[in-house]
Amino acid sequence: MSSRINTRFDVVIVGAGLAGASVAYFLSKQKNLSVLVLEKELEPGRHSSGRSASLIRSVCGHPEVDSLAAEGTDFLLTPPPGFGELPVRPTGSYFLMNPSEAKRLGSLPGAEDVDLSRACREVPLLQATENTRAVFTARDGVLEVSCLLEGFLRGARRNGVVLRTGEELQSVEIHRSRVCSVRTSLGIYSTGAVVDAAGAWAGDVADQAAGLAVPSLLPARRHLFVLQAKDPIPETWPYVWDLDRNYYFRPEGGGLLVCLGDNDPDSPRDCPRDPAVKGRLSQRVQQHLPGLGDFRVVEWWAGHRTKDASGKFLLGPDRDIDGWFWAAGLGGHGVTCSPAVGRRVAEAIVRGALPRERASGTSA
Picture (cartoon, rainbow, N blue to C red):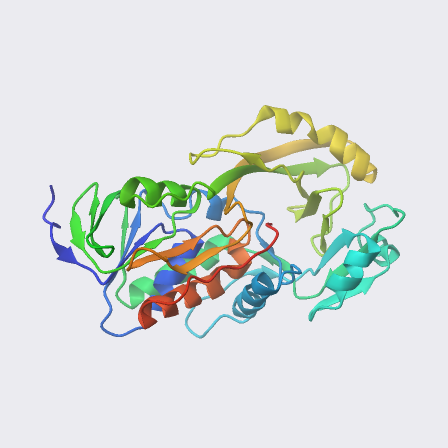
């Protein structure tokens, strides 16, 4: 065992992806608060945070998520002083859906219900479809996610947060329903608060390390493909998400990044690619984007989207264990919502015990 035995930290955060890094960033603004971030990988953001489509989605149509997304979008478009540059490509977005849903979503702040022909003019790959309208959101765009993660971690470390990579949580000691300490692969740390921000592993961390069974908090696998066609795709195009046909795409390096909307249950692991999903790619692209013509796949990968079976975020203090806090189940909304998630969870930790905040929504 290392010399770190019995080191004291006020808060221990498990996971240095976007959720954990954001909580650390906002906690670091509190004076005289010692914070440790544990990351089992040698590099933060290796899994879900580093495998997203990098989309800013500011309007989802679910009040609680929209509140988080609106706050997060403000942060991403205008980072606070000293945070560092956040490269954003402000493309806007078109979400395609039936007219009644478009009317509802288009009435929300920041969204606009428009005729599909407008989207087709701006994104010529789209084809007019009966009974479909578009909702345009001007504040949406594409973000360099690595810069966001680096900004959170840099700001946290600057204010005294300790980040330890390659160190895995093994167990949490709980006495009389209160967090007392954590044991890792390298040492023991006494603490009064643990934040479960372990992404796809959040359920396992709670169950195996602390005996908190959360069987509904499970990851699902989703693939992204970068396609290169004969004609280059302008990077100024808005990204497009067809909610009824369950696919989305955006420009990427002169080509097209495409997601088929797969959502297959999986186990927490280094998310592997599934050749069967790639096998469905050509048929889906020809069906929905025939104007793309012949293409080749230049890159493809898979990542996890983890959410509660109810579709709700797990944020804030646990109901049963004092000192256990959640920053999990973001289900694909982590890029946009992470600044708001980090702030709210940090505030809940500082205040003490509040009812667990839960936000329902459709995942990205």
